[in-house]
Structures are given as structure tokens and as C-alpha cells.
Image 1 (cartoon, rainbow, N blue to C red):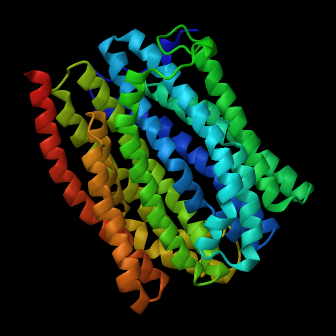
Image 2 (image 1 turned 45 degrees about the vertical axis):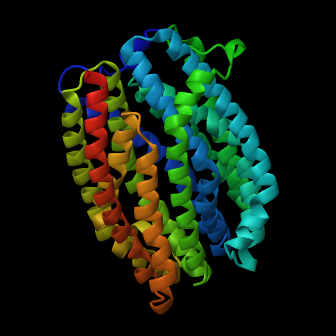
Image 3 (image 1 turned 120 degrees about the vertical axis):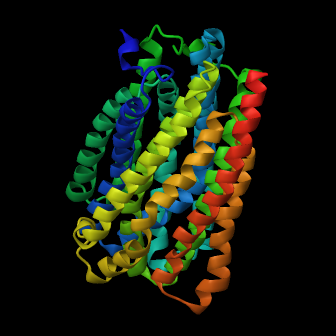
Length: 451
């Protein structure tokens, strides 16, 4: 198979068109991943009831807390693989691939036990209502049974994206997304399995996506070929992956924890508000995936150009990505705000749920480009090999602001609108910190490589 036709040359030629070529399939892939959850939510919302809808939605933030550390480590795989590939260090690329897949397997197995033993206690700590918790526990335990497949897909896709291949992950997720939708309809509507059916459908679809991405890695003749007999934990590769990946994972994990605090505050309004937030948050997820796709493009382009010593292209990558991070989320956020009521009816027809969802959307959709800017600077710094300080600044700017808001401001202003004001305020505070940090990191990296 000629795998080169799927790759993008990130180190030569015009940058903006190639950024779009890279980010668009990645964006569509991310949208399809979100559709896994969206279909889950739509099916249970229409055919099972608002308690089941709240149960599926209330687990999202908690699942993210447990999984984002390992997904962050996969970003370390992306950065290291991209740099080695662009530098022509194919032996080191081979070790990176096999170390990464080993980490994916081990982390997926660990997550099975986390889901089995800690689901109920974690949901109780979040204040999940009695009419929802049993559904939520069941959903989480089945969902976590599929974690090895989830991890293998994400790490495998990170390797493909490192060489500029975002089209085949899109094809894979199209196949698994269709399977997920059909299984949802079968298990929930025909067999009346409720949240268990939704979770089982998700696990099977994740299995399909992981098998397909592994098939690509096993069958290729490119430097990122996978041989299961050569799986290993190379110390040098693992150290470099973790150097970028652990701070990225901790950052995502702690931000997810702040979202758990938000979810706990939403829970205090009852199941209608929980279901409304679930629906609005799912729509917001589409916005996040759009900005995150641009950030991942920026990270891969930065890492490859650094490996190829194309230093003059680094500033152009930042400027082009800032342009995309404004145009894309501002356009999508504006459309989401204008048609919010119609979009929410996709998930439910309950008027109380729709009203709660609109309250959340009214404050978070239009300024969502700020989240894009906030996401971009640490993404580029990861591509430059610096992840620790951006992590600390994200925790201070994002998590710190939201925690203070929830404990100091929110108790005296108990509305969903006031609760979610914490989003744009925390985004702005973090942008300022990250932009200053980027200036120093860029200067340090260029001095190191040029001298």
C-alpha cells in the first residue's frame, strides 16, 4: 500500500492550506467521536426518559477526569513521532510506535479496574441524585470495559497524525460511528436495554475503530509500522513521550476536574437542569473539537518543522492558526447561539430541559474563540517540547478561576447563567498567561537549536 499519499508535507510550501487540509479531516473525525455521545444522548432522551438522559450525561465529566491523563500522554506520542519522522530518525520512530502502543494497552487495562471499583463512589461525591445514580454506575462500568480499545485507537491515530495522515482516522470513525448509531437503535429501541444498550454500543464501536487503526499500522511498510512481537517500553522514548504527555494529561485531567465541580453545581438544580446541561455541553463539545483540531494541527506542524530545522516557518504557523481559531469557533458559535432551541430539540422535547440548555448556551457560545486562543498557545509549546509551564499556567488561569468562581461568587448568584460566566472569564485569564509564556519559550527554543 502507498501510505505516502495519505501524508501531508508540513515542512515545505504554503502553510495555511495545509493546516486546513490537516485540521478539517481531524475536525470531522472529532465530530464523529462526539456523535457517539450525541447518538447515545438522543436515543436515551427520546426513548428512555430524562433520568436516563441525565445519567449518561452526568458521567461525561467524570469519565474525562479518569481518561484525559492517558489521552494527554498520546499527545506526547504525536509530538515525538512527528519530530523523529521529519528528522529522518526512523529507528527512533520505530521505537516510539512500539512504546506508545504498549502504553496504550497497559493504560486501557488499568482503566477497566478504575471504572469497575470507583464509579459509584465518584458519582456519589459529585452529588448524583438517587433517581439517576444506578443508571450512571451501570453506564460507566460498561463504558470502561472498552477502555483498551479506546486507548489503542487514540494512540494509533496519534501516530498517523504525526505524519500528516488525518484522512484514514476519519474513514475509520465514519465506519465505527455508523455502527454505533445502528447498535444504539437496535439495543435501546428494539431490545429495550436502556443505558446498558447505549454503553454496549459505544464499546463495540470503539473495538471496531481500534482494530481498523491497528490494521493500518501492522500492514504499512512506512517507518511507523507496528509489529506486536516487538512491543516494548524503551526508556528513552518513554521519557520523551512522558515529558510532553504527562503535563498535557495532568492539565486536561485537572480542567476536567473543574468541570466535575461545575457538574456538581448543576446537579444541585435537579434532573431537568442536568439534562439541559448535558445537551448544551454536547453541542459545546462540537465547538471544542473544532478548536482542538486546529491546535493539534499547530502542534504537529510545529514539531515537524522544529525536527526539520525550518525555524522561519514557526511564526507563520502561529499566525495562521490564530486566524483559524477565531474564524471557525466564532462562526460555529454564532450559528449555535442563533439556532440553539432547534438544536436542543434534537436531544429532547422537554421544555424545562431546553430552557436550561439555552441558559448555558447563552453565555458560552459566542465568545468560544477565546477557548481556541487559550488552547492554541500551550499546543504550540508542546510542539516545541515544552509542556510543564503551560500546564501550570492553565491550571492557574482556568481551574483556579473556575474554582474561585464556584466557591466565592456562585453561592450568592445561583443561576445557570451566572455559573457559566466562569467559562469566558477563565479563558481570557489563561490566554494572557499563556501568550507571555509562549514568548519566552520561543526565544529559548530558537537559541537552543540555532546555537
